[in-house]
Image (cartoon, rainbow, N blue to C red; front, side):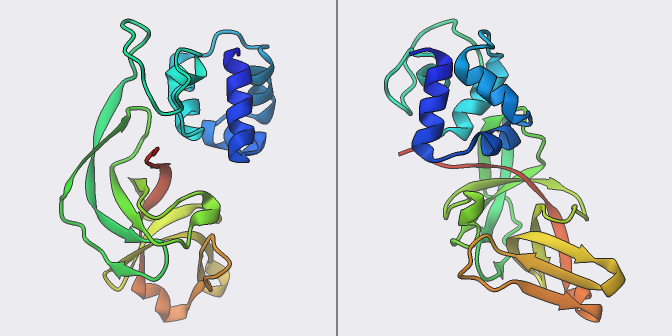
Length: 210
């Protein structure tokens, strides 16, 4: 199979839409379709690495150099993926808020193209519809505000949680929305807003491939 055929096959296997892949990759859906049908024959190495991460596989699988989804074969001089070490500061809840462990724990190595300041390990299932699972590593860029609808790490009275944010300044109202219908949103109004602090924007996540 061609690279494009493998991309399409893997996307369909995972149940991902072209829009989802395009959003994660930072391109439009037309470009995703062009990759899949082979209209773009030379896929940039960095793009290929990102595609492999999104599709929960390896670049060598997409290139047809391995039939194992997560197994990287030892072939010299294919290309080098630049990586960077991100400090792992602790655990963040995907569910009810938990104690924010902001002490240094370890490093996580990931693609250098991820513009994050640190990462946290997720616990719980409240963000599963955003494809963030229990045990995933979420990469955070430090910033005190985010746009409505973006996912952020939030501190609530010294406890941390990961939620999608909706803020209405004219109403002095903040909604922290889960990505799981089993969880009710957290709503803060007026002076209750003083309890909440945005730690940073979630810009990427990493799952283990078993």
